[in-house]
Length: 359
Image 1 (cartoon, rainbow, N blue to C red):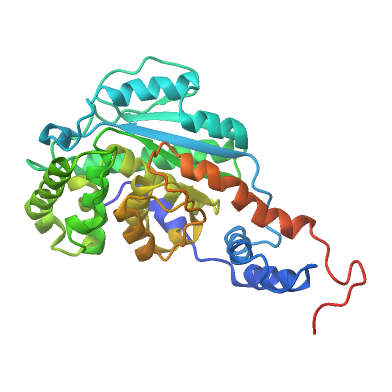
Image 2 (image 1 turned 90 degrees about the horizontal axis):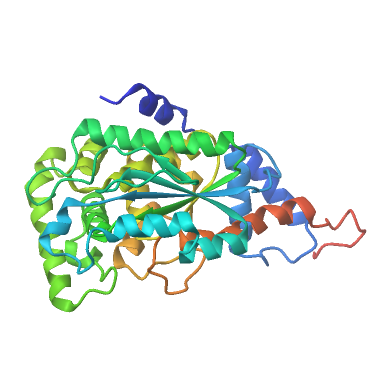
């Protein structure tokens, strides 16, 4: 069973509008440029028209980034040398405006909201912080499910509510961000579960761990999947919430809800890296048409991100060798996405300036 908010959100996710896509395609053909010369921007603009149900779709301003923060019980298994307290310390850094994502957001004009959905320690109230803690970090996935079903659903609904709040506040596009020491371990576990790939093929080096720690990380993920696979009978489509709860994080569940909330409002959402890609797999399993609202901001160096995006049939816009997280790749991709819509609004057509199109 799903809660009322989650169920209504899933039911509200609808396919793209075919006539709007065709109108955008016809408009692209009349713009003063050779056909196809804007490459991926053309397909993206058509999909955004289909999402909005209008051509041209609304300009994608303002843009809002939500950084969901949570801690992970699997940290106890030695999957990272970073202490867990760094999660809370980085939340403070985001709120003070001192992180990389803050600098990039100022450059691109993106608003930043930080959401404490599961930081293990208390985070003092501050401007830009939304306190929505479901619990103080997850349980250790190698011992028991990381989250109960009720906790997973609650975190999904936090994400849905944040999406609605930002959209109601005027946002025309949402961006994903995350913070949580050990969250690449949970991400790799989710990606392995949802795609059926072996842990070793989807597990990267995260914050720069050494080879022995990486091997430990792969073993930990394999142990967790063996322990919990029966919950979804080795078919994640049967029960995506069970998968999220068993091996995911509070930020993963919230991000999945955030994506579903955006899709239900027909607002695009730019995915950041491997954490967002893992959450996107869960969102797509819950509501397949939500994939149409997703835009892959960049190609993370984490191998699981490529696996997840391939499964989602999403091509990343940028390839900059990023692996920081926070939402940095999504923020950098935002001007590209916004530009895809602006050309439909502002480029002249051949007939409007009396230029003959190519035969």
